[in-house]
Image 1 (cartoon, helix red, strand yellow):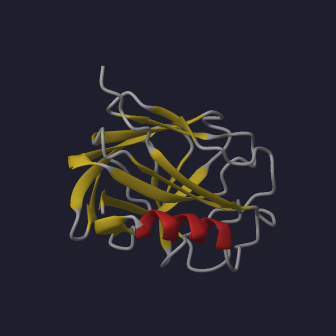
Image 2 (cartoon, helix red, strand yellow; image 1 turned 90 degrees about the horizontal axis):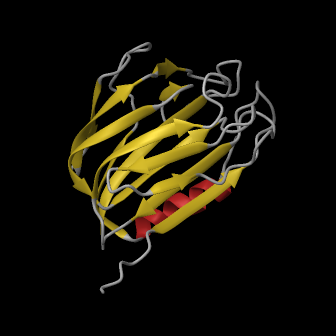
Length: 190
């Protein structure tokens, strides 16, 4: 029987300095993002700057030049122009990001083979992000657990053999550990 190639995963994490400190740089996360982007064409990134503080799901998001999607479930847009929100979360680019303490999902308008994102303040209260793709693939992001708040990670997945139409985000410490997400990206393998 034919074998399917395993998805390629990109991951980098920079540990936080505490709830009130925004990292000035996040080289490990940025290196993972750069490696992810280097393998793609037709890339689009949603940075959440086109929304208002407090906007909730359902939220129509746009990956310029690459497609559209809808975020459903819990979460909201948070605006933090400097520092952190007091609890370790902040945007990667601009002033806004998506924040959630329980599950949410993204339904893509067309199947995608590549999806990546920044996560902020993940794991300081014992949580890990999980992703369940529409193909049935279940992934657990290997972030540090119970570290200082304010950390930054990048996670990207490319699965050219099994394009997917949705990604459901889970939280192993739902309601206790609150996560921030920014600069979500889709694209096609080169």
